[in-house]
Amino acid sequence: MKPALFEYSAPQTVAEAIALLAADPGAMVLAGGQSLVPAMNLRLASPSRLVDIQHIPGLSGISVAGGEIIVRALTTHRELELSGEAHRANPVIREAMAHVAHIPIRNRGTVVGSLCHADAAAEMPMVLVLTGGSVVAEGPQGTRTIGAEDFFQFHMTTSRESHELVVEARFPVLPAGAGAAFDEFTRRHGDYAIAAVGAIVRLGRDGAADKVAVATCGVGSRPMRLPAVEARLIGTRLAAEDLAAAGEIAKDAVTAPDDINATTSYRQRVVATLVRRVVEKAAHRAGQGR
Amino acid sequence: MPRARPGTSVPSVSSDPRARVSITINGELVEREVSIRMLLSDFLRHELRLTGTHVGCEHGVCGACTVLIDGKAGRSCLTLAVQASGHEVRTIESLAAEDGTLHPIQAAFQDCHALQCGYCTPGMIMNIVGMFESGEPLDLSDEGIRLALSGNLCRCTGYQNIVAAVRKAAESLPAG
Image 1 (spheres, helix red, strand yellow):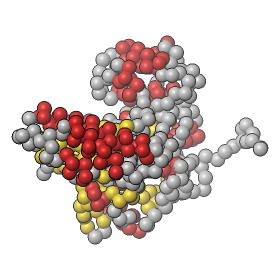
Image 2 (cartoon, rainbow over the protein chains, first blue to last red):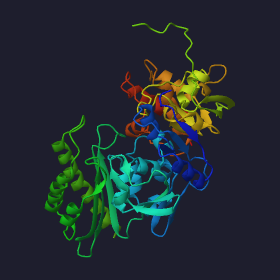
Image 3 (cartoon, rainbow over the protein chains, first blue to last red):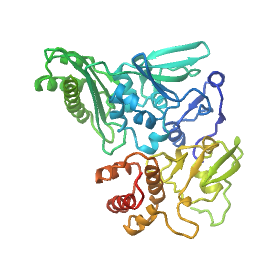
Image 4 (cartoon, chains in turn yellow, red):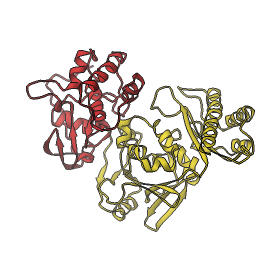
């Protein structure tokens, strides 16, 4: 019996869940529990009440509509990873998902739960930022859509209000003609990233990149796009010197303090290398797609 | 430093909020009233005395507590007993036949000497059972097997023989 005392509710509707959250600011939402329960076992988290949303109908499933992959709140990592429809719409999701912990964790952990947990080194929050996605939150005053850049505020901190339930995440489909790639560096497979980088690249007719998105996680207090890196690459042919220069610029994004795995200068070198490799791979895939 | 004497009774249910759970464990419906903060791993071991499920790190890293929840491998230490209510759980105790005949994966572990202390073995085997029964294609290369086992830590064997056992078990089981 590791967790501290808490109350438990298993609502049957979204409205009921929101009412429970609104009545108790110390309440937390329980979906898969793969981040929350370990935090409770270590007593890093001591919610006054758990609102277990597993019995609420309509919160499951994946659909692709309106240019977005819509992932409902109870969808597990593994379901999204194995979804052929989601993979065809944006292959970077499956590529990143292979790095999310291990299959037994992905079997139970939910995508939306990971987004709401918002670990600064977690892969799925970064993919949401990379793709320019959003989450949909329902609260007592209604529903609002929050863009990824506004949603992730800090390590384990989002702009979700305590009385809101995030009912779905929306990952945009890969733009036509674009290529995407994801890679990360860890000591052991399945660990949180020491640094991870994702990229989406589209090439113009002249072979120069006319659209570049680059995002990273594990190196700062939240997942983030790297606008200076993107600006350096747009309009270039992504030659070796362009990629190397972009990697150097990416070093500025590293703010994570030294930890047991890496020093700041080590992380900078890792992120610079990953930017080079991942942008190159995304560009190669964009080229193949033409 | 005084130690707990063997046989000292340790209450498995404290006075904190409780809930009634009904979980199908190894094919049998079990109903109990438990503390809502009781982990499934503790429920299996303390309430049901199914001590084949081992508890290592209790935060999801080591994989020793892996069981099948609705047929899929999951960490029993990262699941509350109340969360598992209404679901189906299978543990290592479900694998061998009544007469003691080992499941093919257990037999392969024995044949390949894939265990030394055995602490990680139940979690390893339940993870592999989940993988075999998922119907998803298996990658039986060394790398593929190691990837599948990456969520289960073993401190004795160096994994060589575990990889061999998984391959042997896969070959002995009917395809699909």
